[in-house]
Length: 114
Image 1 (tube, helix red, strand yellow):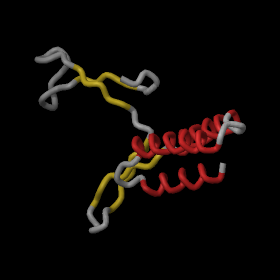
Image 2 (cartoon, helix red, strand yellow; image 1 turned 135 degrees about the vertical axis):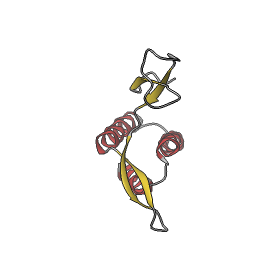
Image 3 (cartoon, one colour; image 1 turned 180 degrees about the horizontal axis):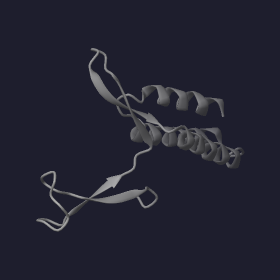
Image 4 (cartoon, one colour; image 1 turned 120 degrees about the vertical axis):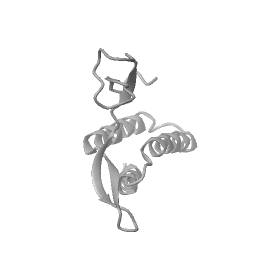
C-alpha cells in the first residue's frame, strides 16, 4: 500500500440500491489518482474517457527533481544520469495511461530543460 496516497472507503455492494444495513458490509479501497478524467474521442471517433495529469502535481514533481539535481550537482554525471533515468521511468510507469501521452511529452521536455 502507498501510505502517501489519498484513499477513501466506499461500500462494495453487488447490486445498486442495496443500503448499508443489508447484506454484505465489505468495503473497497478507491485510490484518488493523479489524473483528471475528461471525455474525448478515440482514433475511430468513438466516445472515450481520457485522463490528464493534474498540473499542480506535475509542477510539484518537477520542483522536487530540480532540488535533487541541485544536491547532486557535484556527483559524477553517469550516476546522476542513472538516477534521473530511474525517476523519469517511474513517473512514466505510473502516468502512462490512455489519453495522457501529451502530458508525458510535456513532462519529459521540462525535465530535459532542468
